[in-house]
Image (cartoon, rainbow, N blue to C red; front, side, top):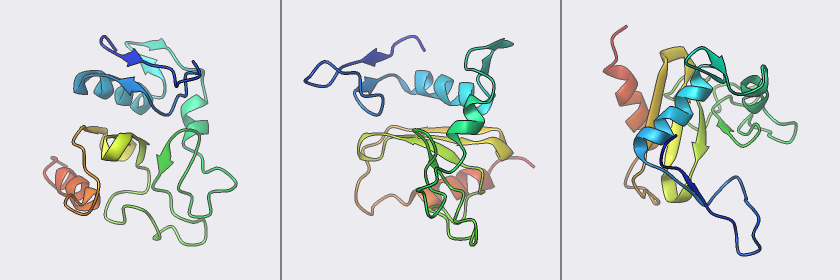
Length: 139
């Protein structure tokens, strides 16, 4: 990432879940790092097993919806169809940013989608948006 700016909260603490600003291309690079299991240009950047850890549902995530700093489309263990994005493959995970700005990572499709629009409310259906994006990909 070339243009990332991290700002601390008012107490001077870097939160990790907010106050990070970057270009769409830099967020795409971030997504690609996770898509490629923490490896960038044949160099391991993240510890081996880290991406698997972040994409494993936390014990308190009843719907399998949260890992470690990433949201998951896993669904509950007894009901994998009960997903946040039901029309998108189960292996989707994403960094959920301020007011709907997201980095979606979909390993089964080798796809990273960066959405920087401010989209709260019901005017943009992310489930349909991603499903349509997947639908235009070649098989």
